[in-house]
Image 1 (cartoon, helix red, strand yellow):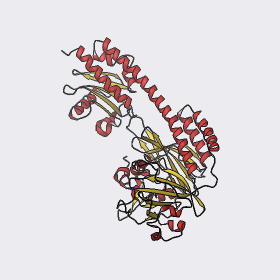
Image 2 (tube, helix red, strand yellow; image 1 turned 90 degrees about the vertical axis):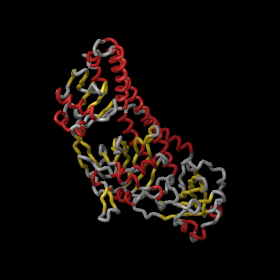
Image 3 (spheres, helix red, strand yellow; image 1 turned 180 degrees about the vertical axis):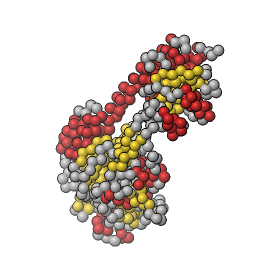
Image 4 (cartoon, helix red, strand yellow; image 1 turned 45 degrees about the horizontal axis):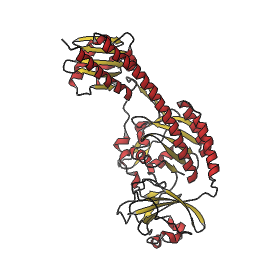
Length: 501
């Protein structure tokens, strides 16, 4: 069964950073950088300043605050995503201002400041405790479980999940603490359109995204067009940026009111998210959001260490068998003896159960392989195709129809081309690895379009929808592809020393 990918077809093309709306729990102003005059603002500023919007436009920002701010020292790097925090007072009320410096203008986000701000020592003590708990985990399951437990304690959200992306941007819940009174999502998979490309790209710029309530009415910006740039204001880096209505519907269909997600960046790759759900509105302050961001960065370092260790151990295993084959190629007189040795280094190198060497019109094999006729048909098929000299597939029957007959022993195949013209190939076969995907709702109903084909809605049900995956092997890893490329080089070195008759 093919799951339709709305991520690339539709959702991934929506410019959600030019939405020109903000969430109502804060205020937004745009200032001319040259003189700090207000050129654009959110319409709810009227309730904050007590003046009509046109009476605020064009005024100096500092006339509205109790103590003037010196904004001249802000960074001049217009490409920076950093937001500088300030505490300020307006009408004797304390506010947090997050200020972004663009080339020609400033963006100021205002939210009510918490009256219960902890001092540095209290915050440090709290974080140190959580750091220690996460640091004790020395394997992946322990790390994931400990992390969601600690995040639940520090955040107060009803549900905390770790959400991992795969190579196709499907997301899977790999750890969860759930006190919502609703169904668990652990082990369930969600399609890419739930967090489409445009949303994922914004996580490269912003460490977190907060929606204190999914039942809000968005606030417009006034005027609509930024008079400095003559376009919509780019809200990519704004915490207050509103989200598309379809996402609010999505949360409501999940019976989620407050939602927050913090990015997990391994290197520059979005590995996943730490996702928070709450049954009722929840307004974590900037200090708590910053602590969750910092704690996620610590978790990411621990995660990266475990991933690097796993890759190192796997690479060591690869090297052991690759070097054994290299020794064989120097010691053995025939290519088939070198590659298909009794210690099965080739099968261990590529985690296969069978291999076949087609060389000089002869067939040599090791382990479980398709019959001679099918292997020869493979060779004819490969000679007709323009494939890489190291070629892999983990669903062979999708490309080669007759492969369905022997899918149990050869659903995956790795091919090393030796001489395409003469039909000389090394073929390694992986057996079928059937499994079940527990989708969080039917992924083919991820979006439901109205009759006009313009308006659309998210799916209503997140009940488990099971997909049986057959005729597929385990995926090939990057280290294995590199090992195959190295082995091909070794084979050519062997053939130079042992020229064909």
